[in-house]
Image (tube, rainbow, N blue to C red; front, side, top):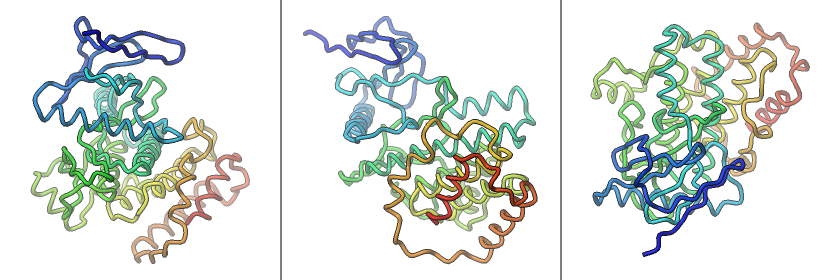
Length: 347
């Protein structure tokens, strides 16, 4: 039987893959799939072969079919070049996961977490993760295993959300085939939905900022108890210098964001607050917030009155910003002024 062929094309590099994995180098393995190298731009993900792996493979294939129906694509979701082959999915190649990079940073410079460069990088990754997650939610996809292990980095250090083999497709009503890590699990909720993704995003952002998963020194039962009681990890050090970013993390845990695009907007504001009047590259390679097209979905909803603690934290954030930058907002670059103005109007 003649095999199908997938043409991989990216930045002028072309290679035809005939659907045969023999001769390809295995570069990764998960619970349900192997990953093989095709060339410097693409890999192929194939199911291991047992029934559950086949179901997971078909679920991920269906997710990519749904994403392909969108008029636009997100630069922060891993691309699929070919989803029609029976043998596997031809995917964009990345350099490794965010968790791998955090481990590398810890091995090389253990005290690096918390400094300006590392935290600004964490804020940029967090924006990209929230942006990619917002795109998935707009297409009715719940990732269902949000975490730094499922966030990859390309050659330009941009984050890509990956692995949809257990994700929820809302229009089918089927449950997730995977579950969140205990350090990312929203207490009291058994089924994956948009809230659980946003809660897990908060844990991923915390890991990006600190190099550690939330409450990593506690047992799983202790973590569940602390989360159920809303006893979040201490972020005093982060709040001392990046209070707005810390508040977004807590906001994800406290389910303050009905729409993850609101979290992305807050993260973008935190980024420009962190880079000393904006004298650094933009947070992404897109024009302002590419999610602005979905922001209108949230307009007209009743505003929730902030709690006394939230109001106090926001006042501290404003005091910190004025102390750091003064009131000379006119010195911000045009793009940063646009973000600040858009965010305040959006709220």
